[in-house]
Length: 354
Image 1 (tube, rainbow, N blue to C red):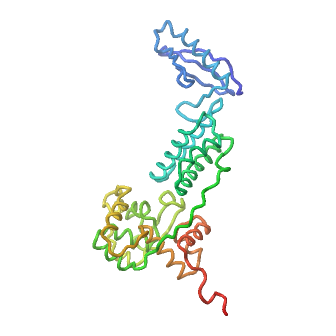
Image 2 (image 1 turned 90 degrees about the vertical axis):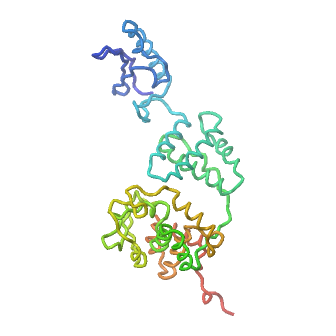
Image 3 (image 1 turned 120 degrees about the vertical axis):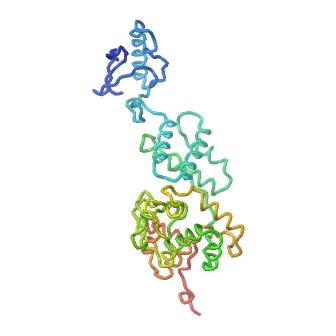
């Protein structure tokens, strides 16, 4: 229990009454009981009754804090005294994650997982059974793993904010069969189709392949100021890409040749300071798939990035160069990426001879 003195009453120059007290030699004052979940509001009464109501508020505050009740900073989440419940800590962890520079889609996923957990929590304390009951509703292994992953992100932040343990550590992921991401075999032909369909989508796909940038954010949000004067490089700061690190990406000549530089502050696709909406390329790609005579099942907008990665690895044989080109945080990520693409590491001449 923090060092705490019994609250006292005082008035401001304009005759408003407040209750003040010290916790660990720091002064706090409350004009009403909102911060301790009390309805007492002395200043809503006539002046001659305010002292009486303020004394009641002082008693309520003392009782609340002595019994270990929670008191947070004014207009903040930082704890002054008391113990937050697991539910409150997890809620604060979610708020912290939502205030970070993450995508709108990821925020939606975190909120969805949090709400599902909240529905299944039997009380304010978090248990392993609460997590199990949340996950048991997902028969699809990928969905199960996705919810588990997002809950784990929230719990890990909650541990920093005071949660005693992460119950998800005892719950294993479902083993999912590897899915083969299909690269593109006839890129020139697909690009020709794209050029006829929509110029913006054509440039986006060309840059996804040639610059290995991610289409829905890194490319969509590009401004002319992100390019060097001769358009030979793209400079992205850490808050603009998934890795969180500054990136300098070369722009191949076949891309530079089709770019028409505009005002430095303008987006390269919208021609205005504001980029096009988040689903812009997703919507265009869905429409293109229906019309295309070349695309195969399982090929997506990201297949251009996959194909570019394979091309770099085959030509250089260097994982380090691939890691830098892809903007991966580590070599392990790049290795996982190549495994997902089923890049052959053995050649026929490497196999046993008879």
